[in-house]
Amino acid sequence: MSETPEVPDDVSISEKTERLEEIIAQLEDGEVSLERANELHNEGTHLLEELEKELDIGEGEVVENK
Image (tube, rainbow, N blue to C red; front, side, top):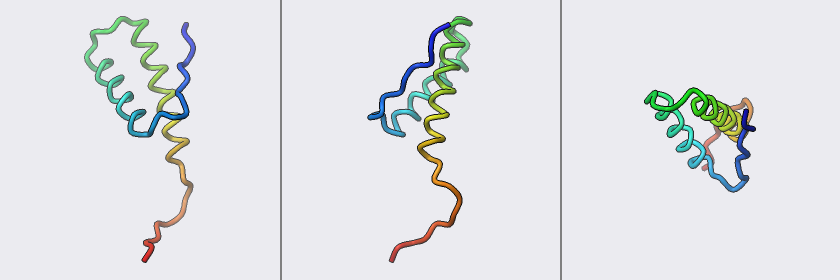
């Protein structure tokens, strides 16, 4: 089994989101082998974890600066 790919620190949230969308499209297409589907699933899970960490700003309220 392959290791979860490392996501470079300089990859933007937008780039991670785009890659995640690519992974979803490939998996939904159904034209990948079981092994490749498993690799894509692992990569997607890792990307989701990274995005959740980056986007987790805690609980609170949004205050408009004037």
